[in-house]
Amino acid sequence: MKIRNLGGSPAPTGTRPERLRHRIGRWIACVGATGLFSLVLFVLAVPTFHHECPRRPQANQSAAIATLRNIVAAQAQFQSTARLDRDCDGVGEFGYLTELAMPDEDGRGYLPIAFSRPTLLPEGGAVIERSGFMFQMLLPGVDGAWVPESSPVTAMPDTDGAEVRWCCLAWPSEYPSSGTRAFFVDESGEVLWTKNASPAHEGTTRPPAFDPIFVRGLPVDETRCPGQAWKKIHWIESGGWSYWPGEG
Image 1 (cartoon, rainbow, N blue to C red):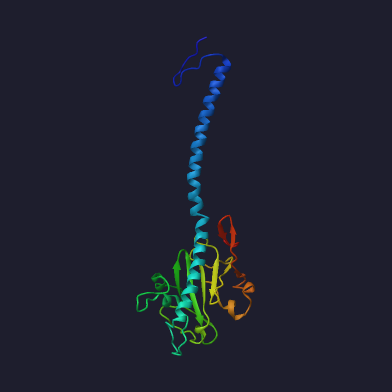
Image 2 (cartoon, one colour; image 1 turned 180 degrees about the vertical axis):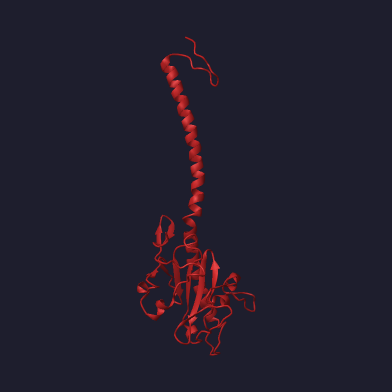
């Protein structure tokens, strides 16, 4: 019996089992090629999605922690060299972010020049936006309250208090796309974090409250910033990677 060939590949010849094996082989080859093409598309798409979505907030949060540590070092150098001594007692004072970034007579600042260009908050405070996070420096005031950085400076900090204390807060500029956690550091150099939820601190409209951190005089592991626990960052080494439990 002759087999009609309607076009395409030559019609298989031979016994019926041989023709059946030929057809099954063609079907497997077709499905395999389609599956391989789909797999390639999936492999190409997943890294992009993974990088743009979950990894961006984590990268920004790691960058925020690194920035806070740089601020700790900058404050120590700024104060030890007495770059600022408002009461002229020979003891240097800690400074605001814009002051830390201002070049000295040699043209060098203790922070990148980008920290000298603040963004104003609605209530008059000033923050620095960097890598998806807002940073605000606070210095002790004469009345015991904390004086946030402003531009221009409208309230002067207590000169004696500013010789020994300072604190800095960091929170996402766009929650949750640029980050989800909020951070805090002071002259001790210990960086704290909070889950930053209900409601989340974000951008210039919802900056964190800072008074409860110090006014209550609580240990760092028990401090609250309205209803949110602030915890120490404990780095974990695993498989060549460093991470902290609150990173996600």
